[in-house]
Image 1 (cartoon, one colour):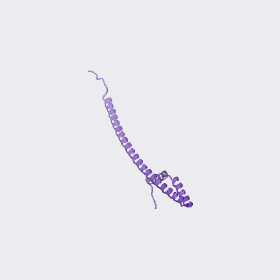
Image 2 (cartoon, rainbow, N blue to C red):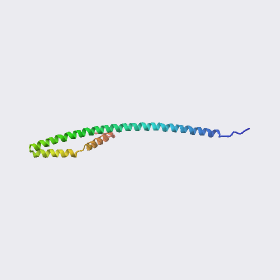
Image 3 (cartoon, rainbow, N blue to C red):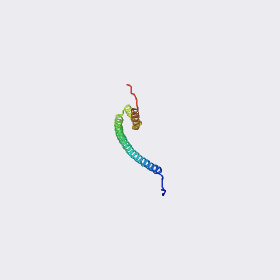
Image 4 (cartoon, rainbow, N blue to C red):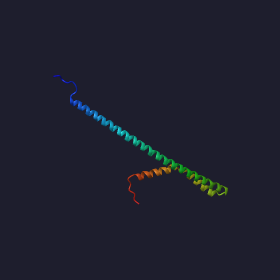
Length: 125
């Protein structure tokens, strides 16, 4: 009788199991890659939405500041034209306060409020 050369059946089965596990691992990795790509896409959309809100806030805020400065300087012109030093001083004080107030500070306050509201907080009134 001629003896068969080759791998024993157990080795062949073990090899098939290893290959099957590799195929499953590859499929899991592909699924994870798809999940990560989708998560990245959602994160980018969220960032774009936050950017749009921020830009709109800044546009409105600076438009409002520009209008406030315009009105204050009109009042200052009126005070100077009427030679009213008291009103001119008060208007100039308002100009300085407005210049010191940054829309970015207000934005920090909004962000802090949003962060506080996002936490599990029990509010008592």
